[in-house]
Structure formats: C-alpha cells, structure tokens
Image (cartoon, rainbow, N blue to C red; front, side):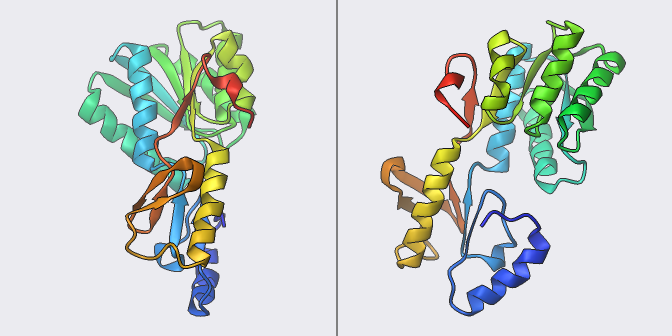
Length: 237
C-alpha cells in the first residue's frame, strides 16, 4: 500500500503482520516496524542530488534559486530540502537558496508565490518546485511575467508539464518511471508472498527491470529520471 497517514496506518499494519500477513508499502512508507519491505521509487538523497545538480548546471554553478514546496509541514519534502541544502554545501557552494515558499500542493498558489518571489527576490534565476502541481504553477507565473532569464525545474509529472517544456519555460522535470514503480511493487509483492523475498536480501531479480538493490528493508527502484525536450514525449503519465 501507499501510505497516506503514516502514524494511523502503522498500528493496523502491525496487527496484520502479527497474523502472519506479509506487508509491503510503496511510494509512501509506514513506520519501518509496521511492514516487511518498502518499495522506494527513489531515495530522498537521490531526488535532492538530481534537482540540485540540475539547478547548478542551468545556473553555471553560481547564483540564487528559490524553492516552492508543497506544505511546509510535509515530511517527505522537508527531507528533500534537507538533502538539497547538504548538496549545495558540499558540491555547489556558490549557489544560494533565496527563499522557500509553500504552495500547499495547489497550482494557483504556486503561481502566486512565484510571482511574489520574482518581485521580492529579483536576483533569483531559477525556481525549483518540488510539488507536482507547483511546477506548472510556477512555470505559468514565469511565462506570464516574460522572465526568460528565470529557469523552472522541479519534481512533477511529465504530462502536465509538456507544454511548458516544449516552450522552454520548464527546463527539466525530475521524477521516476511510474510504470516501473508499479511493476516492481507487484513483482516484489509476489516474491514476498511466495517466500522468495526475505529479510537480509541485498538484491532481487525483478523481471524486465533486472537486478534491483535492496537496502535493509527498502527495495530501491533506482535514480530519478530527468525529463526534458529530448525525451518527455516518450512518456505518458
């Protein structure tokens, strides 16, 4: 299952495990002791490195960027931000984060926040949106402002960003292959149910995906994908 409320569901999952039911989570995790394995689409560090390195590439290694997140209380996005800060410090010290603003996973709010960012922080040359609706929201703000000097990147879905990618407003969308994530989840579930995936495994063979790393109790799909003009039309989700 993909977990919506981590604390609430973990108690129920623990009861299931006590009855001998194998439990796998995917996309969003429960408490580690409430499941056998978590199928992770990408590690928080992997997501942060991909986003930060792409920002550094587009900015030539120096300059200010802003982050538009979902909710300021979102645990997963706050973890990404923590790793983004770490990546800036260790690999791109001439980058600076000008501000971090919430979109509350709302496209219109991301639009408004990006408008404000461009007014209050005129030195910002890149907006990094890390909530799916925020990327097209930020892109529309940049488009309407005619700010061709401001790049937009972020974590989102290819389909909702294709017009902005093709028009050059959004340079890069970072995500993972959702079909591969679904495939790996079903494959791992079948292995676990049949006894072919047990604690202590370091890898598994997942059909067309080949060898997949198992890190403790996490099954990791792999590094994030970067979608841009050259490949975005090959994906439909």
